Length: 335
Image (cartoon, rainbow, N blue to C red; front, side, top):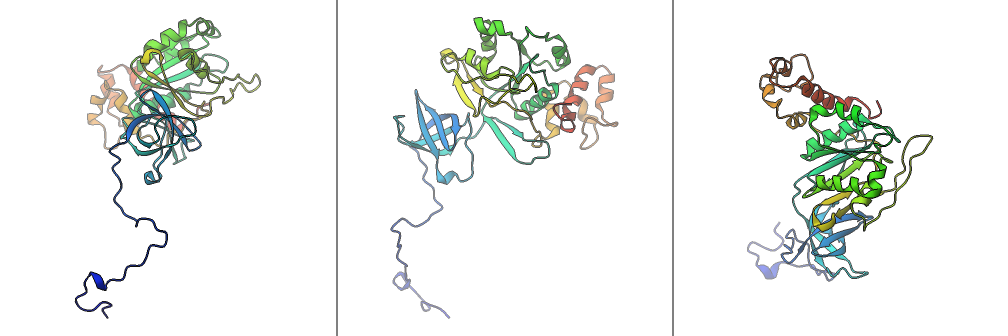
């Protein structure tokens, strides 16, 4: 039975009044063509601090973004009050496409990914040579995450006045990862900061490391006008305290680059990493995979890389390093 007859027109259709007095819902979203671009510096309990031109603006995520997260390093489109004055609040309406995403999971069997930073192009893995003792497995995991995200890794070894870096550097020599070795005395007189700063010039570098390794102390030396709280290592457990609770992006002097200080980690799960991507960090081994069986893990008896290396096409130490990194998901960091 037709409600409005055979040939209804517009006057026949009953329109219910809108009691709330607001506009009807629509799938058409505003383009916000007047939005300004900002860089996310830090995220704290829903309040997002952005750098817009030469001022910092506090903003919140617009409802239209839904569940899309905003993380440090994101480039975003911001509307509203962009003056940066006290008690003002702007609105983030768009997150621009990311050039890179550094992720981790709480553990290897945890499917929930945590985005650490966005748009970084270098990962500084900070490790103390003593107090606390270095954790090679954690370094391996950070390297895998860096290669998977397309970031260039950098080893920063601290507290060389307490232990020699030679043994640790020897184990990573075949990977060709650049490194900087620092001591506490050099941090005090600025020499260490100068050497590290040269490696950061022109990059957006995320700093990761176990609690207590001196990561935030180094960041404070690199950016002396923005001091963050530092902690100490527990003499009984050998572990550091989490003094950095949220990631923070800081510009290097003379705008020569960016450093992103992240909270100390005690684990770096790799559930999100596709093992087939790790081989891409070894361009000298990639041609040798042409004769590998389908879906080869590169760590099995039929892998063609064994013959490729035996024929002298690559250094055996490189193949060993690749397989050590591929095996990190089967090992705990403390092993």
